[in-house]
Image (cartoon, rainbow, N blue to C red):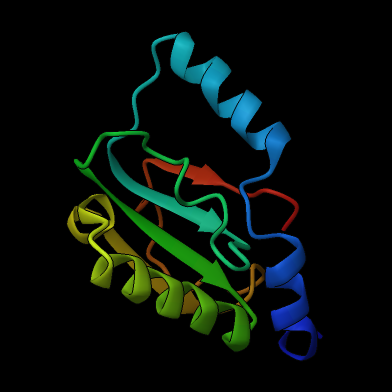
Length: 119
């Protein structure tokens, strides 16, 4: 379904979700730091990936979604931002994987943190 609406979804939901920003900031204020491997389950167009990790670079984000069109948007936007000098994205290890949340293509206990925001 999201393959059909991917462009419209991206236009209307490009910025990180405000409730997620508030949640993330509150856990960061509590002293939690993210490192290792982080799963963004149901990542959509990747709008919340820019928030995850803040200014840290010692982690890897895996974005997983079942919409190939939304994952293409992540790749295209990331490549475009890097071309225009966003070095923070260049140093981040971001992988995108096409899959659904029912049959996850990962070994057990591979992730240090998992986010599933409206997924």
